[in-house]
Image (cartoon, rainbow, N blue to C red; front, side, top):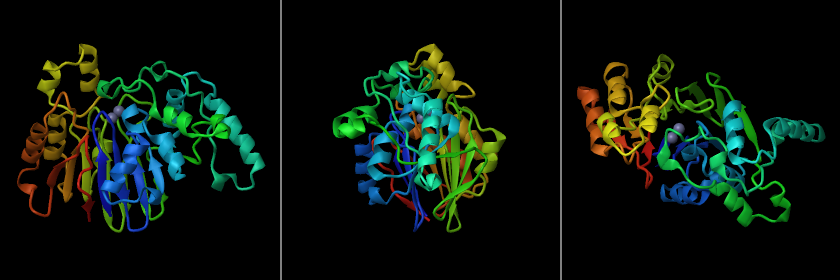
Length: 336
Ligand SMILES: [Zn+2]
Ligand SMILES: [Zn+2]
């Protein structure tokens, strides 16, 4: 198994998980072009990606979803509520409601012999919308990721022919999953688990193949028992270490935003991550990857010191090596 964090932080998140046979991308929070570039930088072939999995609909996790999925012709896996929220974000003018999409899919299914295999086409709305009016709750805890307009729409508009303009951001295949219900993609088994965050239905994931277990938990306000249970026995643990509490308190965010980041549905602080690592983490991972570090309210060394102190004597050459995921470049590929 191998894992490459392509980007991590409130300006965009994406992580590649691969076995020798299957490649999965978790989130596509940068433009398709940038993600493709970073995959190549990491020695991966974008065309070989088998599926795209989405943790939640905040812009820093979905920015490139539509364009990347179409370009690569890969299925996108969402929970139903996240899919619905993503569509609302993509279609501020509500040209096609979720109910409309379901009706359209039913119509297509009846005209296709193997609808289950063929998947569903999503008709996306006009590229003229202003996403800021789409879903005010999205990204509210992550003001750094605020951007004027989903690039996906711009790219669809710019690149596609007349036929596709009717349906500018269609996804070839959508798969719905539910937190708590495991499923498989190729030889990788995927277990999604609920995380506390201010999105429609946010999840973290555990991936297992070839005897290796990788856990990803970012964008969560605290560590509830279901998350600590899911993260047991991980060989690679990717954990949020978003902010230093003092820096956040004294930092530039408006008080309301500070409150949201610190809340039970906000982001995990260095102290909260360290508390988990000290008290509840079983010490099983070869690598502990600290992720989603705030550029304004954290410093890499603060996050590192807190985590390393919490791991203490359990760190060695072969175990519990602390790494910091970055916003601007892929992290080294971790192979186990
Ligand atoms: Zn995020
Ligand atoms: Zn988020």
